Figure: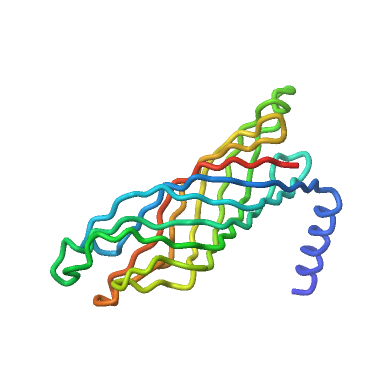
Length: 200
């Protein structure tokens, strides 16, 4: 076990010594909805946003990189609770959830394009995301989890080695909210994201 840990530490030291690091700012539009574990009420998509900073570690020569972001993210959806007698008088509330989001990506960039990669370089990415709930809308019929764990994947292009434009889809894997009257009726966040990052 000690030998394995020593090898991992050695590899991490070599990678960190040769890797290129950079950071930037990110802005994104999120088209989000709530996915309930049972189809008891209809939901509809709404447009939200994310803002924050991104850091990237590039492993030279092989096209792989690891990046992570720290984002203020707004998610949620419109829920047709008023369609059922158990929530009579509730209406169809629009729920907002405000998160501190930490997405982490393993990225592969096509960087051997005979010089074209200096102008445009396509890449694919995926990984986990973690959110911490900061605030939420006041909907008495709902109770919110303190955060959520999810997974995402997507693709993008890097322009002029500075601007990253990407599209992705995120699956919430743990519940984001539950209803007050039916404890087992819970929902997860699902959203499309279009993001732009400027790297310094």
